[in-house]
Every structure is written in C-alpha cells, then in structure tokens.
Length: 261
Image (cartoon, rainbow, N blue to C red; front, top):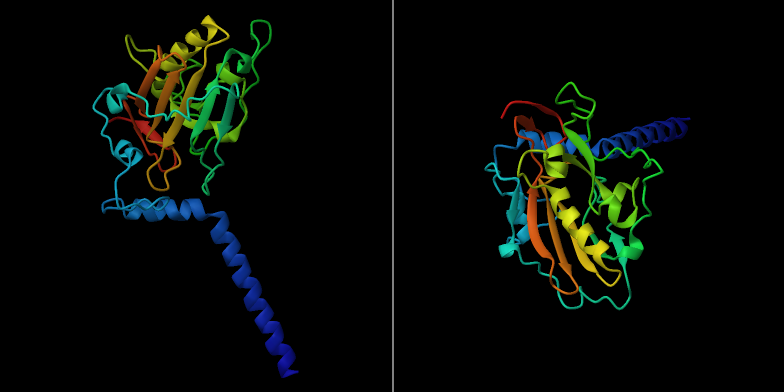
C-alpha cells in the first residue's frame, strides 16, 4: 500500500512538472520580454547570436534615429559576392525559417519579370490575414487608412506575388513601409526603383536581399536592411530603413505604442 501511495504521489509530481514546463514553453516570449524589460537599464547581450566582434547588423541595431528614416550602408554599395550575382539558374526567392520566437529572418531573391504576378487591375488583392509578431491595429488618425503599423513584406508582393506568408511579413510602421511625407524615402521608394528596372526588359535581373534587424528578444524589428544589385550594375543600393514613426513612442519588445517622442 505504501509503495502504491508513493508511486501515485510521484506520478502527480511528474504531471505537475510537465504542466509547468508546458506553461513556461508556451509563454516563453512574454517571460523573456519581461526579463529584458527588467534589465533594460543594463547592457544585455544578444542571446540569438553571441560574437566577439561586432557585425554590420549589430551596428545597425544600435543605430540611433536622428530624423532620417533611410541611411546608406557601406557608402550605398551592396556586398554581394560574384556567386551571389549568378543568373544562370534564372529567377528565384528564398525565405529563411522563422526563428524560435516566430520572427521572420533574412529574405533573398533573384528578381526577374517571370516571377512577377499578373496585373491586379481587375482582381482585388488577397486580404492579409497573417498576424506578424508584435502587430497591433493602432489608428493614428480618423481615416480608415491612418494606421500606425502595416504588415510589411520583406520581398514585396509586386515582385513574386507572395502575400499571406508568415516568413515574409514583419510589423513595420507606415513611415518604414510607405512614408507619405514630402521628399521622404521608405521601403517603397526602393521597391519602386527595382520594379521599374525589371519592367524595362525580360533580361533584367536584380539580386535582392532584405533583413529585418532585431534587438535581443524584441518582436518588432528596429529597422530593415535592404540591398539590391542588377546584372548590368546600373541599379544598386545598400540602405537601412529605421522602423520608427515620428510623433510616436514604440515598444519594440511587444509592439505597444503611444503618442509622444
């Protein structure tokens, strides 16, 4: 009888442990984010990738926004290798797997007219249903189009027709995605430049790379690193777009935001 009771007690303890482990796993994001918030006044190492030397992305994540949404990287010169620029296999796109927090990672493509979707002139584009990490529907004004956040494509829909794909959608501010201010640049500025080049000829190719830049376990990227280079070298850029919105304070940890600097 005693052995039976001990066994039943041990099974209960094991069940409790399994449940606790499950709860911790399911809430791992919020637990880690609280840890980061508590330690936000101290220096926190990047738990995704520890390195003794600072990489370009490490530098970008710590770049301070000073009012200019887009800044040049490496004097605006892309860093693709000759192998990266090969076009013998034709156009392609490759999306990285989501990381352990469910965040999209680097997206690569060799863009060409053949990858581009047919004209949507007579057909409504599919509504986005994917909830990108950190996304909240926050209005900035009274119009239905005045939203703080977009679900921003890494590789633009106009290039490959890819729409509702979690690996390709991040939470991006309106200012990052399509800044409507006079003479302002944003992701759409460079996407339009690439699209115009591709439309010129079926022989035009563009090696394209877009990398969301995260800090520690934050769900909303601090910005997006974009590089492009055409096969004839007439189009090329290497830029960083800050994921900010003037007049708003954004918590990149979870996407919460409020008015004010």
